[in-house]
Length: 215
Image (cartoon, helix red, strand yellow):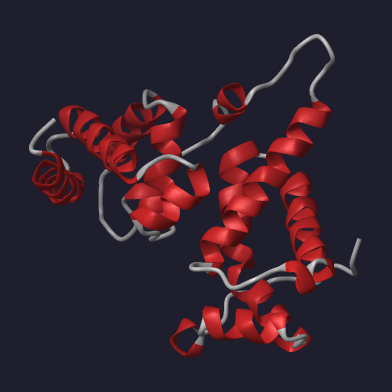
C-alpha cells in the first residue's frame, strides 16, 4: 500500500482533469497527486453512501490510487476521470464487502446495493425546507429502491451526466432517465408542497417525456 496522503478540494476553476490524466500517463506524479486531492472528497462521500464504513472507504480509495499508479503504463485516456475513479472505487468496495461476508450468506450486487443511503441534504442542497418537510423527505427517500437512490446521488449531489452514470452503473442511458423520473415522481407525490423538489421533478419529467414519449 502506498503512503497515505490526505485529500482536499482544490479550486475547480483551473482544474483540467483530462489534461492532468494525460500528464499522469506520461509519468507526471504531481498531476496524479492533483487528481487525488481534487476528487478525494467526492470519492469519500460516495463510498460512505455505499457502505457506511469510513475506514474501509478510506482504505479502498488508497487502494484504488495505488493500483492506478502501479498500472499507469497499461492505462489509456478516459472520457471522464471522475466517472472512471468512481466506478473503480465501486468495484473495489464490492470486492471488499464480499470478502467480509460470512460463508453462509452469499452476497450478490443487488444485496450489496441495499445499503446505499441518501439524505435530504444530498438532494436539496441550497434550499430552505422546514423540519417537518425534511423529516417527510427523509422517510420518502427511504422508500426508494437502492438503485434509484444511487442514481439520484450521482446525478444531483455529484452533478454527473447521464453518460457518466451509465459508465459507473453499467445500465443504459434511458434506464437512468427512467430511474430519475420514477424516483422524483415518487418523491413529488409525497412532498408536493416542497418547491425545490417540484422544480427537480418538473425538469426531469419534461426531459424524460420528450425523450421517451411519456412513461
